[in-house]
Image 1 (cartoon, rainbow, N blue to C red):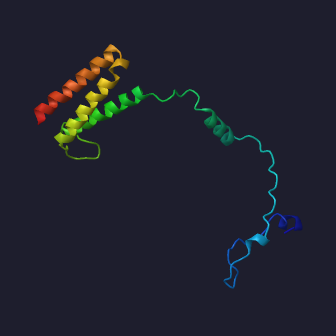
Image 2 (cartoon, one colour):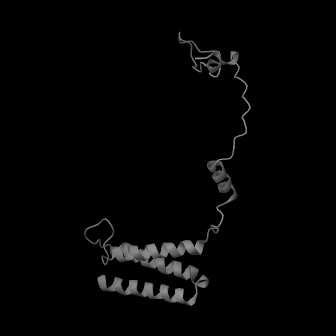
Image 3 (cartoon, rainbow, N blue to C red):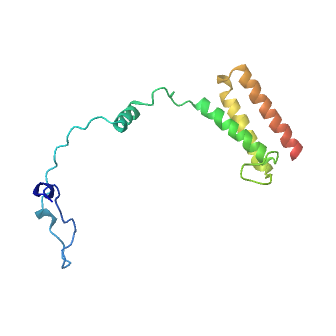
Length: 142
């Protein structure tokens, strides 16, 4: 090893106690002054971090109506599964829990009531038909 290479490393004892078990006097040691950092060339990683700080580009801002539309589709699928009409993924047999199915259907109807003013006519028809189908099947399978 060259002498130049050895100077790059500094060993500092950061233990709080001496080898004999007595507390170490930390105030006697001064931490070394930080070395100035060299300007690094921009990398793909730093550019990605800068973009993340600025925003996500073309991603639209959060929209509660879009989220509730997604949640509605999940609730409808869950209601079908809880009525025992569809088998949940990972299950071999259908599970029937009509109390939970009722909550899913009622919640779906509540969401529709909350967002119906933001929907176009085709979407309103789709929601009404879905809720009607779920309610009719609930009565048939109760």
